[in-house]
Length: 325
Image (cartoon, rainbow, N blue to C red; front, side, top):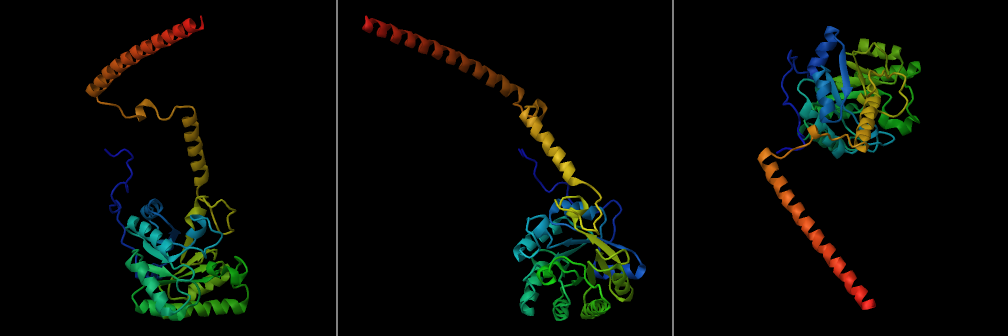
């Protein structure tokens, strides 16, 4: 008998109104058609399943999990093995969305061969359909594309560069820096990147780059003119335990929902109203009658033993009284 009922839930099946699988070329076609691209992060099976079933186009297994799932102060601490672990969980849940995995800090900052080997692991071992790398790493992108690993670039505010930037600061605030950002975006596109995340840059810069670039841009804190938008799932539902960034819009309050549920459970346990009789397992009727009969006999034996013990105590007391006399 399965007492806990733990499982992956209802088997994954296509949606009632099935949508075509999202691929990297499909993102490019969405840009050409002017269709906005929706993207969210996910780090585990249940979240990814909900996101995918909602029709989100791109799921990023972001290194932001270091902060929102593992409790680190920035994204730098998460490892390749941890990212692979979470990517595998997400991939099991997804049927439609494009699954992109962040390559964590240190996994692509050395020799290109080592970075390529790490990227291949995300595709081969974890089922990622693309990887994301931060910065204008043109030669790396070219090498990964040659190795049949689709790549999403990431420019602007790149969280893995937090120490160099001196914190999470808006980027590209001067004409020269905007022009450099645009040149970097074109270089990544020419190297074979299939899309580029633009983070933490002025709306005007993102709009100009998006209009000129042949591949889709996915914005986060880059204004409404990008080809698509992405948010961190935990920001979306208020599970970050921190003030929201300016660009975050909260669409729900999961923290309040969870707190209410947990408080209700604790109170029911303390007042012994959980579990109820209806939430308890019972012996079959025949076994219950036998058990009660056996318990009745056991109780009778216990009563007899108690009487014997009481007599013994009386006898001991009587002997002690005689000895004292």
